[in-house]
Length: 93
Image 1: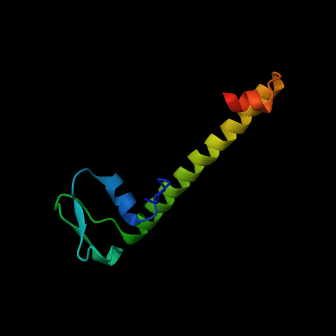
Image 2: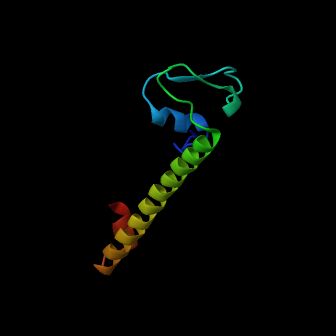
Image 3: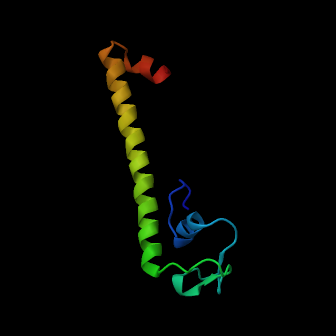
């Protein structure tokens, strides 16, 4: 994940699939799909496309939450202004 908490690597997706250390990397310095190894034989290796799609979904969900928070903040500020509060009063909240 990046500094803001947004998923940015297939590893971010993989950890959402199962608990525990069920996967690893044949080359820990080069964490690419080709180096993905499954450590728990009760788990299946996801396809590369599943990893790409899963990462994209995590990123999309993150963006949607961020957008919704911004929209909610704007909506709340507009409602407070409609009630007669000044920008300074709203900021003080």
